[in-house]
Length: 415
Image 1: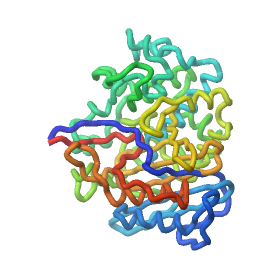
Image 2: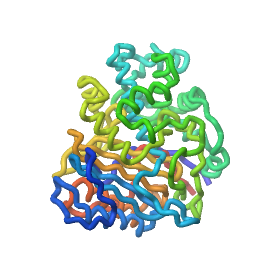
Image 3: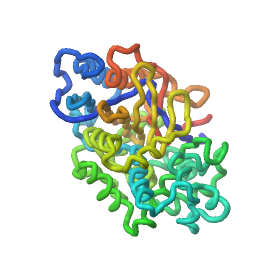
Image 4: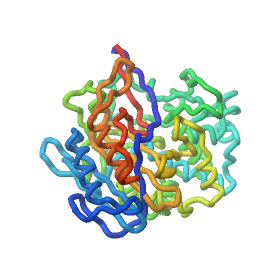
C-alpha cells in the first residue's frame, strides 16, 4: 500500500464563533433559546450530543456571545472505562499553534528586529541557503506561499511507521532539511497558497535566532501569559504526555486501524512550532479574543495578520490566521488543527465578541472514496451542524460534505 501525505487547510462547511466570559451554562441546561445575537443553549446541547450519537467518542466545546458563555461535553474520554469527557479538558490543538507562533513573530516585526518582506536567508542563511533563501520571504512562510513542501510527507513511510516512531524526537533543523529536499509545491511563489507545516518549523527557528532564547520560553512569556492563559496552555516540547486532565486520543487513519489506535502518548516534536501546543477550549477563546481585540499586537501588525491569500470560495489565509465568511453571518477568524487522535476548530468574530472552540478525540474516522478523499459521514454532518448552531442559530441546515480538520496532515491511501 503506497501512502501519500497530503495537506489541506480546511474550514468547516459551517463555522463557529464568539467571545467573552460570564455565566456558564452546562450541556443539558434547558434554558430558553435566544436569537442569533445570543446563545441558543438548548440547540447547542442537542447539537453537541448529536456529534457523539453519530459516532464521535467524545466532544467538548465552549461558545461565547458577549459576556455570556455556554460550555458542554458529550461522550467519553476513555472508551475502555467509560470516563466522561468534560468541557475543560486539556487538548492537543495541532495547527492552531500557528496563530500563537505568528503572533510572537509579529511582535518582533513591531520591535524592528524582523522585516516581513525580507528574505529568510537574511536571518537564517545556513538553514535556507542559496537562491531559495533569497527568494522566500518571512511573509511567504507565514501565509504558506513559500512553496516549501511538507516534511511529514517524507518523514514516515506509512501509518504503521507513525505508530512505531511515536516516541522519536525530531530536531527542527532536520525537519526543515527534509522539506527543502523535496520538490517544491506547484504554483507561483508569493501568491499560491500551499499549506506546509515546514514553514512554521522555520518560523520557530527564526524566533529563536532574533530573540536569543528558546522559542517556547519566548512564546510562553509574551503570547500565552500576555493573553492571560498561562496555566493550561503550554508547549510540551518532547514530552509525550499531556500534563493535566485530558481525554485519550483515538486515531482511525481512514479505517487503517479498526478499532482506532490510542495516540494519547505521542512525542509532538514532528510538529513543533507548527502544531505541538496543548490548550483548553476556554483558553483558545480567551486567546483569540485578546488577539482580535488588539491586546497582543499593535494595530498595524494585526492588520498585517489579516492580509490574506485565497484558499477557496469564502476561505482565505493570513499570517497564521484563517478567514472564513459565512453568508448572512459575517466573517470570522481562527484556525483549526488535527494531530493524531485529536481535532480542534476555533473561530471568533472580527470584533472578538462571538466565539466557538470545539475539541474531539477521534480523527480520520471517514472512509476514503475512489478519489482518495473522505466521503460524507454522519459525524461530519453533526459536527458542522454544531458549528453552525454556535455561529448562526436559525440559519439553514449545515452541509454534510466530508471535511478534514484545518491544517491536519492527512494520510490518503492509494491502492
